[in-house]
Length: 152
Image 1 (cartoon, one colour):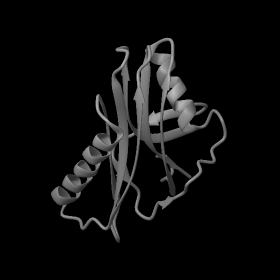
Image 2: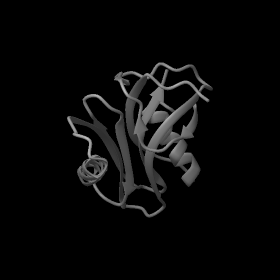
Image 3: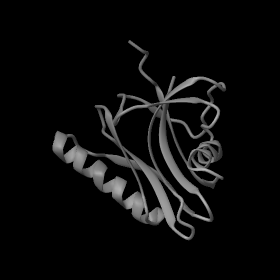
């Protein structure tokens, strides 16, 4: 079993690239996680995890991350991605992510709704929500990315 993360950092960015994969990679770099090996995880924030503004992980590290992204090859399209973390007082948190053809504000509103529903369904009081979002207007190939990095 892997150790339980004790910190989390919210990251988001949008970027262009010559291909979908390059646009995604450029968005990861702009968000500060491009030189890490991302391990996509589902939606639970460990109890007591502390929010840290700056991610301090050595290049090449394995990084658990819940993320949403959206890539488009349609010039002029606006894409956005968002992630929100719902926090409880004495329990674990819940992370929700989203990516789509919409604005940053719409993406953030969607993940906030998802967090509220997750807490309602679990019967856990929601005390705070932290969210981050990015949008990008596609020129050729663009990507929006938002993530909640879990680290030690």
